[in-house]
Image (cartoon, rainbow over all chains, first blue to last red; front, side):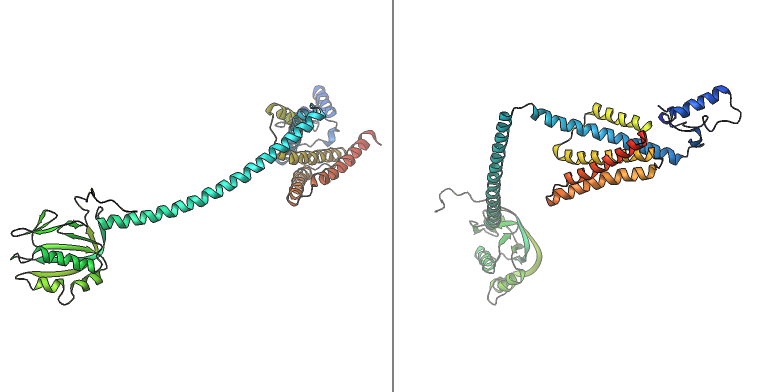
Length: 276
Length: 108
């Protein structure tokens, strides 16, 4: 085969065209190379441009690709035919039948799994809704029972009572008025008021759940600030009553955010059980 | 020639690498091979008729294979078996090219 084309780095230089005064050996080599190439020496290009080289390389590459693809496809096809050709007609029928069966079974499985998936998805959606509802209820109950701290808009009521005229029943009235006005969480001097909170009067102070609370008192309530303030300021209501006490002063302030702590001792139910 | 050498080299590479061809790919590969064979015989004919142009050869090589695959793909999409159609066209062309090559070589 043509040496020049096998090694394209130095394809034609030195071979053609025939030098002006060639030695006999050179001339013979040139003739030999030309004969090998099936071409007349005159046809051989004197110089080889990079473009021609690239084109030749591309042509060679594509022809090589033909060989590669041909053998790849040949082998792939032979694998299929070989495995099936070796079987007898009876076996082929059996294979065909079993393949049919398999595909039918798989189709059944697909439809069954689809049904299962749909059922699981709908039940998952239901569970999700139930979980969200339960979570909402839990949040509300936790706030209501006072076992978690709460925050939100509300009011701050400050009571100064240097002469200890503000009794626990007045505090109870104040809490009731706040609840009446829609307060959702209440704290007195940093003690959360829960469902079973008890108030008592000491000699010169008050006690909330057994903890001493001294003046000035600060009552924080979470709820709609406007409604709460209006409820407190009703003529003859809590503010009026407290302001009328000897030496006592009261101020109500709306707050965009009030923070109320959790109960220090959440109630433990021993006797009561829910009736369902 | 270089072309023949690279043909053998490609075949050897395929034999050594043992590429796996899935059944779906196999149909496309088959039509690509037929298209490439057609291009190769066309190139050989052009070479013998001294009208070989590498540019034309490469263009025909790529576009024939691409068109063949595209046709088969379209056939698959619309449910018509165009593999046979493409194979027949290329088969006829291969026969024509080989006949031309034979005339060139044996002067028929």
